[in-house]
Amino acid sequence: MLMRSLPSSVYEKPVTITGWVMGLPNASDAVLRFDFLTQRIALPTSELAIARRLRLSWYGDTPRVRPGERWRLEVRLRSPRSYRNWGIVDFEKRSFIHGIKGRGYVRVSTDNARLGLSGSVALLDQIRWDLASSLVAGRPKSTAMGVIRALAVGDRSAIQPEEWRVLRRTGLSHLIAISGLHIGLAATLGYWLFNVLWRLSPALLLRV
Image 1 (cartoon, rainbow, N blue to C red):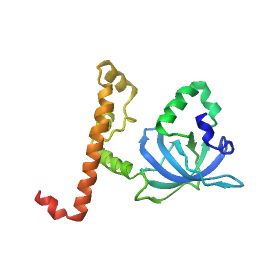
Image 2: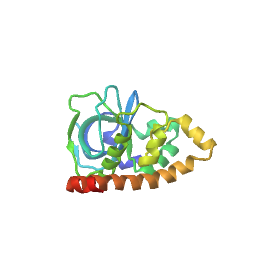
Image 3: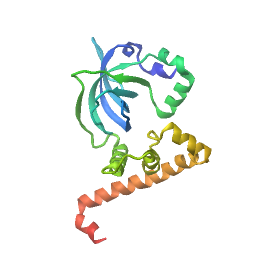
């Protein structure tokens, strides 16, 4: 089973994990969801140096997190048995595709802390995040923002179910996947190149 890649001792109890935010966090009104690459998992009597990609949910009044940030979080990871009610096969298939080794949620704890930002971990995701943030900065909330984000940075997590239904009915859902990948890659590379050139020589860019 896919989930056996995590030791059984980490399930269904509070554990403290240290690692990095990966991918593009997706925040709604009630929950923040993001991928997390563990560096260490601390148990009451031991500490495991183990690298696993987890998908975490953080409820309530959550801080703003971004890719590449290093965090210490108290979490509760769900046992593989808890997924059988809603289809373990589908869960394992989706998890395998995305490299997810476990799921859980962040607990309310004073131990939760941002430890810094890595300049190399999830670098591409950091660039995509900056680009996605620049798209919505200072703009009113729009129902089409999920589609715009998918096309711009290749992230489809913000597309709502009703929007997916419309896209499927009109035969455009596959174009979102294909176009989003190519446009997102090109836009990300262009955004990164612009920022590099701007840091090196702002005057040069102003003359272009």
